[in-house]
Image (cartoon, rainbow, N blue to C red; front, side, top):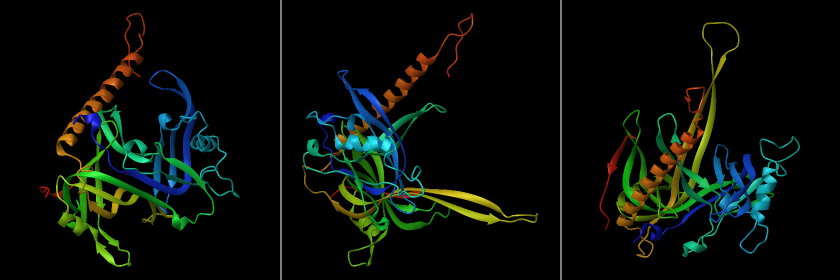
Length: 338
């Protein structure tokens, strides 16, 4: 099966929270045929809980002003109001204003061409200090929807994911400081993306509350039942947190105590529900994943070479001589599928 034909499974995020801040711009972009269109580009930060802060990226191709029917897109108009400051954020709201609450959502379908969802993607960029291409998971508005919500309680805010992945390995989580098991399980795998690519992803499972409010060891259940090579469907919480703690320290000197600030970041996808995918039409094949990884490596090389070319173009002759310058520690447990 060719890379571009590799199936894509469920890949969806659902967010509800305040707009903390935004860096959106109205732009004029061009499609592959060179036709210009109005669009929005940039990102927003949503506060979806006391500590949860979610970056949501907006791409021009998915935020065009006009729909395929030639009508002005409601999503575009909402994004314009955010970009223009008509919808206040936590950073811009006046004293008597409440920041805007938005819901970012989409619909899934068995037909990939009918899926219009905000999603998890992968960002590739070159670290100019090392010349190495780095990657990170990125949450995208994509072809999903953004809706302004009123009269929503903060306790109802959410950041959820729903994905189908190819399982590479299952591992006990180990504390690097003590080399002791935490009791949680790490599922490492690959998330198929459009265009024949895949993105490495890790899901985390531990003790959760079941429907009756009782403790359920999701980590142990996954460790006992999941196998390398399985196709795994999981949903749960996007636990991207930023916690700032302040500590007052006083030595033997005089005056006020010194305040030290520490910022801790957590970036986890915590599993609340999971199941094996047993429908052959939905299962990911090892050979397809291998081909997609080759294509991913090719894309990384393109990113590196493209930026190298751009840097070369920026070089300008200087002076008469024409010289120029350029501005986990884990205990792996891998097992075969059924």
